[in-house]
Length: 203
Ligand code: GRF
Image (tube, rainbow, N blue to C red; front, side):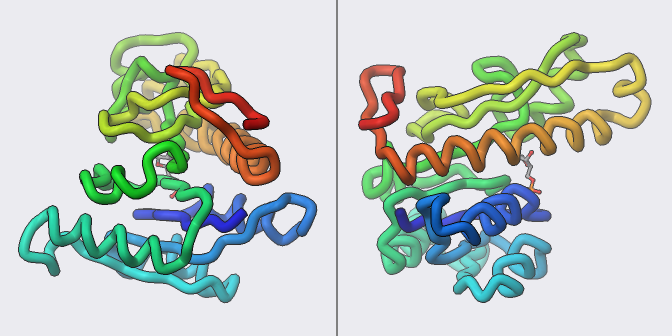
């Protein structure tokens, strides 16, 4: 299966996918990496692995719809079977969703449906949960609302309150990249179909 991975940051999830794809038995290749900003470690990781990249910044477009159209055609150019948003900090637009809905995999650093949005780690900590974790799900038109494929739990310790969730996020990310690599590999090798809120693998 061909993947396009979208990133906005350090790209440690992307790196885990790059490493997994090095083994042909994994069943996926990263055709391109896209970003909504320059000078991020995620793009450097792609370049180091000789993967084509594209950068589309919202502020370079007349409006959000024009950015969405450009992101859709840039992604389409690589004919992906799956799009993976791995720490991509933008909400995908209508055109992108119309083209790829059902084939977009996102990873979120909390146990959805609790704590959706951009501050999942912090929000869970502030709420006082004792267990949080990560969720790999398909993207629908809502924010972090699509059908869940897999989740993993991470315990919160008292010390996690001291640093605003940084250490907790690192522990979540360690679990998250394994979960993401596992799910993307299964989807790539076995295909999937969506029945209501259930994702069936194999299709
Ligand atoms: C991940 O925890 C992702 O779920 C969150 O941001 C982090 C991205 O990390 N939205 P990285 O860029 O893959 O290192």
